[in-house]
Image (cartoon, rainbow, N blue to C red; front, side, top):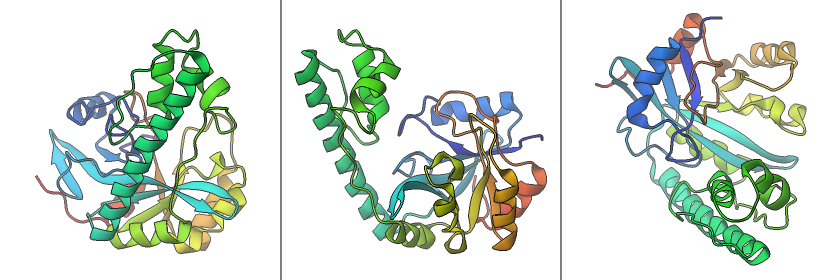
Length: 263
């Protein structure tokens, strides 16, 4: 499938590597015409409209928001986001929580290993930033080891985030975004429980670079049963785009729900 739209991309505003200014060039190299910037818990401050065109590449202002459900945490993707008062207030709270959490994890690691970590406690900070600081310290522990030994979900230095309920998250994103999608359903411990949310959403992330084969027939059945949009993207945290995404026909249907591009 020829990917023309990569609808799941992260930048340094959260935990990605590809800057906003570098996105058009990376998109062109990958043959991608459309990119959705979906940073964790943030609307990218460099995008001043829900949909814009820069250097010939369409950029969609999006967000990835983690929420709490009865069976565990999942991620929602909002597309074509407007900045509502309620969403801004919640994102500000989440960023304060992120900074406090990163500081607490860093302090626990420093106490445990007797090292000093260089972490910038600023909006967007998360576990990847702490893990990189561990790898760059005198801890004799690499990036992956920081997660395995220290700040993985069951690690001794792990600190949980305070995320909104799924009901709150859906309400916030539905008021701000014309399309709200369930992200990577087969990454969760209970995919069926995550997919039970489909009737409350607009879309499901159908195309995603999973590490192992998944039941795409199940996804297609859910999408058809609830007349949902299919979304997709590479979940790029590095500089590679177009690993997964939508072809021209699927993107045309998705784009019909978005406001016109500016610029």
